Image (tube, rainbow over all chains, first blue to last red; front, side, top):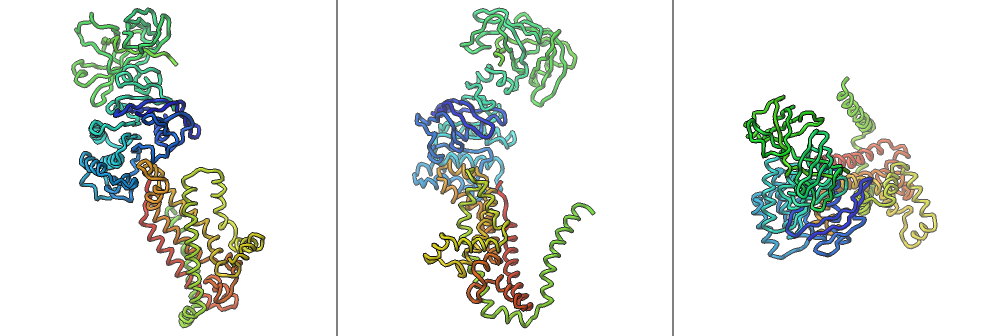
Length: 367
Length: 259
C-alpha cells in the first residue's frame, strides 16, 4: 500500500499543498485533473525526482521520503516514454535488470512473459527510432515492469495516441494489472481513461486534491463546484432548500423557475447536514436528463419541465440538445444517444417536456 | 533582393573574405620552398610540438569539462551563473592577457611555491600545455554543456527509476547519448589549442626547438621578414586546422537531437 500524508512541494510560483491519498495494493488509482493542476509534480515528488518539502510518503508502512529514487521501488513511465534511443528494444527492456545486476531467473522469466503478453517479440532486435506510437508504449511498459517492481507509476503515457490505439492499450493495461496484480498510480487529464482504468479516482485542481472516491461516487456526486465543472457538467443551477424530509429534499431553482424534488441519499454525502433556506448548487449530468416522447405516460415522472428546443448539435455518437424551460433564465444541456434522438425526432424550436429525475440530481455547497 | 537571396549573399561574402585571404598566400608561394620548409627539422619539431601539446591540453580540458558541463547542464546551485559567466573569460580577455595573467600567477607566492616543487611552467613545454588548457577549458565546458543540454533529463530519471545510481545513469545514458557532441567538442577544442599563440608565447616564450609551436614559428618567420617561409607554415596550419574542422562538420551532420 502506498500512503501519502500531508505532502507539500513547490516549484517556482506553483505549490502542492497538503496532499494526502492512499493507494491500496493491487488497485489502480488515477489522479485526474486539468493541465497545470500539479499532477506531474505530485508524481515526481512520490518517485523522488522532486524533493517534498513536508509530509510523508509511506510504502508498505515505511517512510521513503529520503530514500534515493533508485531504491524506492517504483516503475515509472513518463509522458514522453523516454525510450533510450541509443539502445535496441531488447536492451531497453533489459536495462533495469542489467543495472541491478539481477541474475534471478524469475525476473528473466517475467520479462519473457511480458514480451509475449505485450506482443513485442518481433521488435526485440530493432532500433527504437522507427517504432510506432503504440509499439513505443508497449516497449516502455515492458521496460518498466521487467524489474518486477510492484508499483507502477504512469504519467499520461497514452496522451499522444489516437483513440483506437489508446483503447487497445487500456484493455492491455487492465489485463496486465489483473494478471500481475501490481499497484498502479496513474495521472491523466482524460476522464474516460480515468474511469476505464481506475478503481479509485482523485480529482486534482490547482495543486489540491478536491475529491477522492470510487468511480461511481465521483461520477454521480462531485463534491465541489470546481470538480463538477472539471467533469464537464454544465447543468449547474443555484438552488435553495424549501423543505426537508427524511428521504427527500424540496429545492427551488430560481434560474429554472421551478421546484425540484431531490433524493437525499443520491444527492448528498451521508454526513451532509442540510436545513431549510440553505443555499446550494443543484446539478445533473446532461446524459441523465430525460426527454419525454409525445404521448408518454407522465404521471410517474418527477420534476417535469415544459419548454422548447433551442438548438441541436450532432456529435457523432450522440446529439447535444439545448433546451430552454418556460419562464426560465438558463438552458439545460441534454445528451441524447443517436438511437434515442432518431426516435424523438427533435427539431429546433420544438416544444417538448423533460424530466430531471430526483435520483440523478446532486447538490453541492457553493464555495 | 529577397531575404533568402540576401542571407545567402552574406554567407558567400564571408566565404569570399576568408577564401580570398587564403588564396592571397599563393602570391608568395614558392613550390621548391614548400617541401624544404615542411621537411626542415625546425618545422617538423614545431608541428610535432603543436600536435602533442594540443592533444594533451585537449585531454585535460575534456576531463575537467565533462563533470563541469554536466553540473551546469543539470543542477541549479549557488554560484552557477557566476561559473557560467567566467567560462567566457578566454573569449573576453585577449590570449596575451591570459598568458600575462598566468605569468603573474607564477610570480606570486603560490605560483613560486608550485615552481619550486618541481613543476616548471614558465618557458617550458608544460607552460605551453597550461596556456592551451587555460584557453580551451572554458570553451570545452561550454560546448559539452550544449551537447548535454540536448539530452532530456527524463532519460536519466527513467534510468534511475529502473535502479541505476546517478553515476550509472550518467555513464549508461547521458554519456552515450551525448557522445557525438562530446567528440565534436573535443575536436573543436583541439583545433583551438593548435592555433593558440598569445598565451603560449607569453608564458612559454619562443625558443626554437624547445617551445616553438606552429603559430609561434609563423610569428618568428614573419619577424625575420621571411614571407615565403611564413606562407608555407600558415598553409600547414590552415590545412591541419580546417581539415580537422571539416571533419567535425561531417561528423556533426549525422547528429540528431534526442528531444
